[in-house]
Length: 279
Ligand SMILES: Nc1ncnc2c1ncn2[C@@H]1O[C@H](COP(=O)(O)OP(=O)(O)O)[C@@H](O)[C@H]1O
Ligand SMILES: CC(C)(COP(=O)(O)O)[C@@H](O)C(=O)NCCC(=O)O
Ligand SMILES: [K+]
Image 1: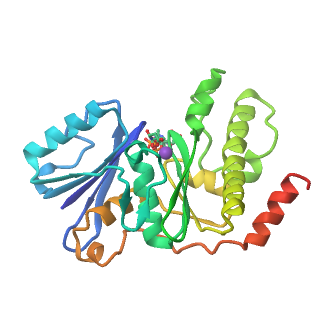
Image 2: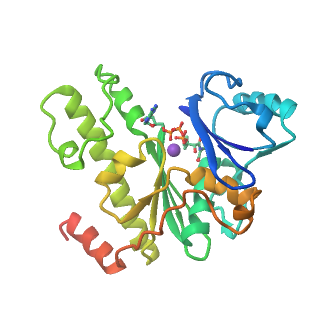
Image 3: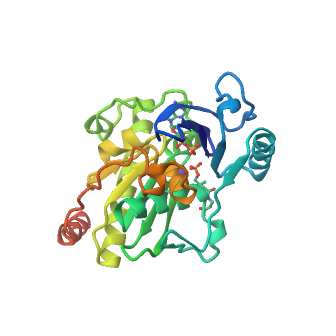
């Protein structure tokens, strides 16, 4: 069994993948601030032959986790952001400083779709761009929905956006604090994503397919007008591409990869941008 770990600032996600059949056998998540010790919510390491890790948590969290795993598992692979990988050139001045979850998303997106806009809606919302030739441009970082809400300190933190709510409702003016806050942060997130996408496609002269991932991807997806696909396992896709182990992975297949969304034409994107600025 292969254990894949995606350690974010809020949640440490894991999944167990069958090395023979490439099937996902189980998955789960634990709070990142809690110690990562095999137990109730964590898979049994006896069945694990290899681990692949993407972590943006504090260095100490990763070091402890790796030390613990190395005692029990033979192959432990830790992903790092590099200058180049799998045909993608990292756009950061200091490539190692790009969050490795963003790098995994960019690599997975490029492997799936060629040029792409990779959006990760977690503790932070990150929006990264890769051109069809493999140049990563860098990206944008804004606080995620939960962080935006907590920063207001209006006592609404415990009333999360219902992940089933329709975008229409969320985009209406709120008539009590909790709705005003939830609708406000939702509008902030989706309008930033729509606008950033259009600006960068306009600047670069190319309409890119958009891929969405992260804990808030489903709800954010409803408010994003740009054609896109939700890919919950996008970070894991990067790990598969960097450290291919199963037969399917070696053939370039990534688990749960969606169909590549067909972007609208550049003319439409530019017309939308002009319209939104009343030009
Ligand atoms: N069951 C859940 N538990 C915690 N957060 C959730 C849950 N479902 C959705 N979320 C949202 O997802 C975010 C965490 O998403 P995730 O992509 O795992 O973040 P990170 O990678 O930063 O840890 C939270 O900030 C919250 O807004
Ligand atoms: C931007 C992030 C905090 C996002 O993390 P996440 O929301 O997935 O927990 C993470 O990718 C990170 O720590 N990046 C390093 C800084 C950078 O990418 O420029
Ligand atoms: K993120």
